[in-house]
Length: 399
Image (cartoon, rainbow, N blue to C red; front, side, top):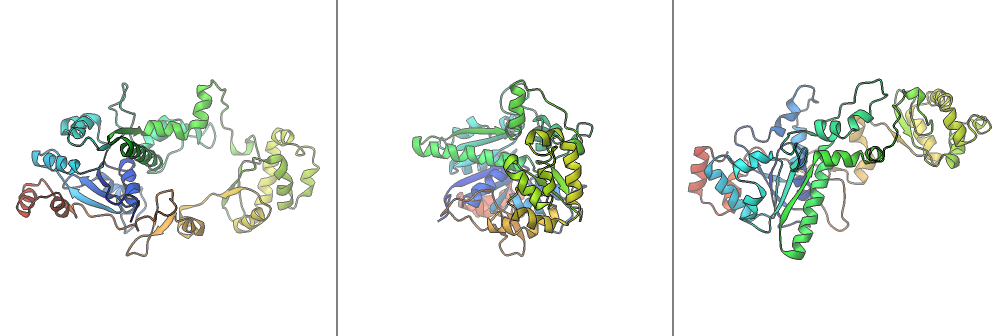
């Protein structure tokens, strides 16, 4: 039996971070009901069709974050739709939403509204900027809040004279989903001990600051910051990225520099580096970093990436290939650790949630549902009869 078998989750969120937290619960066996408005459904369904997004016959975003869910198309603005939701809440364990705080109040789905119907409910709230303070009601996405507001967007630009670096879709949402999942599971543990549900929350801003914690904490300590220099003038040649003969990049990360620099010299077949006074100590290498970068640029440009991977591995050096998206389907290590897993009844792979629990197999990922595909079945499970279901469908309460 799956770890969360019998756990009933209502995903009343949109786009990525909130729904992705529900996806993780579903990976471990929870029954996840996805609430969507009739008509267009969750706007996330349309993200892959927006200008500039990769083109595919598959709705890849929806496939990833709506797997293993059942879809109920429900008009929460209608009295009947609201009543249906309240009945579902009475039998639910977790309710996830990222609706703006004011909208929750108008729809009658704030924590106080739902807790009154089910004191054991875990109410999981995601916001852009948190639930207190002058910006509590402000809307935001991972690009505007997790990425830009946290300082990450500014810090990862190639050099100080370059424009800020844009994020990619979901870059902050998926880590934030893990934080929301952690909050839910912590609250479930507390409920196991006390019998009481409760309200848990996280925000894109909090998660962005946590992700940028090393530098953000430096700022909080009054540190003096130095503008990021151009690549050729970086301060440490041994923790830097280089280009190979076939145009691929990798990043070298020699944190134990004194011990590993001889290994690098041997990998490059350059024993003279060990006697060159510019490079004999860490202090000297840092002082002459620009010269060492130029030398390493020349050396690494002599072989293709595949050759350098073999050589650097043989000498025990830590490095990482700068993967392209085209590399990911062929990443055998990602498959070995079950980060990439087969999508049921398909030749496709999908991305699993980023942790495993020994002895607790995950639910094989099933295709994401079409809008309202499970509306009637969900309502039957809640005790409604066919006459009511047909009437609500006719009235547009369900889709």
